[in-house]
Length: 155
Length: 155
Image 1 (cartoon, rainbow over the protein chains, first blue to last red):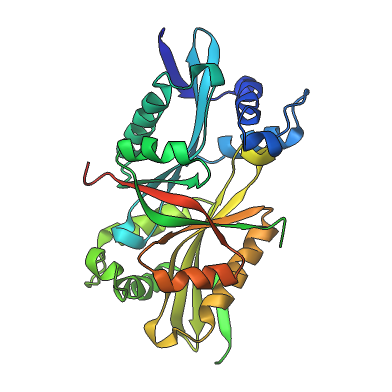
Image 2 (image 1 turned 180 degrees about the vertical axis):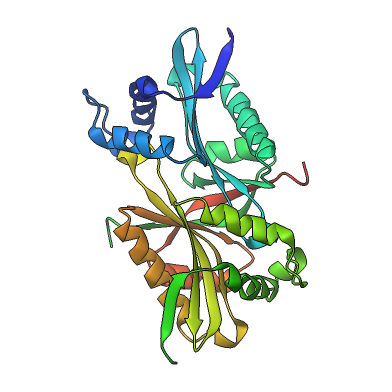
C-alpha cells in the first residue's frame, strides 16, 4: 500500500464519495450514482461544510479516493457536559476492502475525537451487517445500546 | 395536567436540567448535582448554544421544568444527502413519569425533525433500559441497529 492522505473532503471528491455509497449492498437501493450528480448531494455537502462540528473525511491513495467517513462532534449536557464523536457513512472502495484501511480510518477518527476532547465515540451499525460487529468490537466498541431509527418517509 | 410550554433552554434552566440528569439510575453515577453548578455543564451549554444544529429543549409546567431533551440535526451525504434528527439526553422529572409527558416530548421532537427536512430520527437506547424499548417502538422506532459505544476514558 502506498502513502495514504487523510484530509477534509472537497466538492471535487463528491462523485467518488457517492460512487462508494452506491457500491454497497444497502446503499445500492437508496443512492443515486447518476451524472451530473444529484443536486441533493451537493446541498448536503454544503450543509456539512457550513457546520464546524462536521468533518467529512476522504482518504486518498495515489490520487484516488479509497475511503470516506463523516465525523460529527456533538456537545451535550449529560455526563458532565461530555462531547461525543459520532461516525457515520463509513465507506471503503470495494477493491480496498480487507486491506486494513478501515482500521486506519477508525484509528484516525478516534484520534480526532480525542483531540476534540470527546470522551465517547459512537456509531449505529445496521444489524444486518453481521460481519462488521467483530470489527468494531476489535476497536474497543461495545454494543451496549439499541440503535433506534424512525423512518419519517414511512410514517 | 396544566399547560405545557415547549421552548429552547436558557442558561437559568441548567440547574433544573442537571437535577433531572442526576435523578436517574444511570445518571446518578456520572453526573454532579452540586451547587454552584459544575463549570463543565456551563461550557457544554455554551457549546450547544453556539451550534445552530443543536436544540436543547425544556418543557415547563406552571413555572417548573418537568422535562428536557436534546435534538441534533445532522447533515450527511448518504441516502441522497439526507438530514437526520438525533435525540439524546431525554429526561423527565420523576414526579411526572408515567403521565404521558414523554410521548408529548417525542411528538414535539419528531415534528421539529420533519420541519427541518429530516427523513430519519435516531437515538441510542441503553440496553439496560428494557422498559423504554416498548415506548420507542410505540412511537414507530425500530431497533434496526446496534448502538456501538467506545469509552475514550477507559482506552
